[in-house]
Length: 282
Image (tube, rainbow, N blue to C red; front, side, top):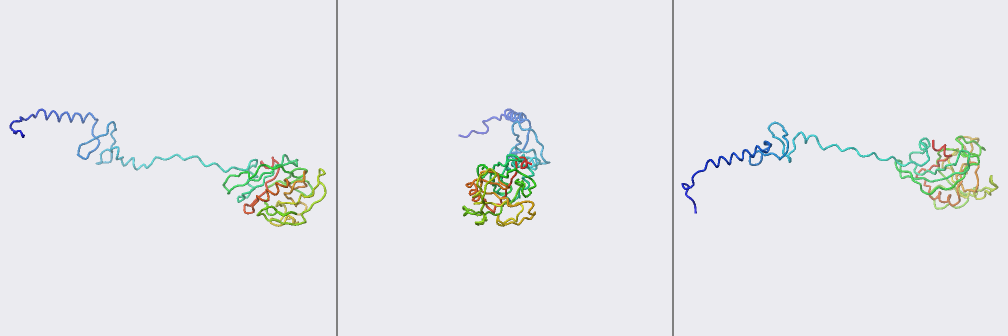
């Protein structure tokens, strides 16, 4: 049932009081900071006053100011630099620098001392110039020349030359194992007599790998060309060990020779790195 308007007396004092209460409540929030959809000015509780561009009003939490947005995302600190590739143990910077950049196989022969004929050999490989070097097999015992090592080899000094030399050809008296390495099967790879300790030399050249010291790379190990002259020696090979010192070569056991021939790959530009501990660490 509707009430006649004349029967409800106006109560203006109460309306005015209500408006005053609402205005006082708005001031208690700390002021106004924006315009809502209804036209009322609003402010996030506890947010400080942030002046914006002229005529834009202060930014709301969902609408950052043009000053803050122009700064872009916060800078991300750089991460740690990548670790350098793992080098071959025991080789110093000068020796490492002699290894060609494209080489991915290095047969490292390390003598016990400058005057020792005992050594240790390890084949190292890597996947590329910037990749880590890793051992392809466990260390193998080896022999070198009777009088040890030298940085300047001469014919008859009974020392093995120190340095980094390419490996480009092999050969022997016996059929080779499965290998992709150039191999000269030839009955001229024969030797007789005794070594320095009275051990028989027969069979020492059943398998050989030519070390490219004072020779033409890529030719048979039997080639006698000596670019530096015959007085600088030659015929320096990796061959089958006969149980004692050599005249200038490096020797490893029969089984290890077969294994090495199976692992060497001319596409990986293999080298031999050889010398005594002190020389190689330089």
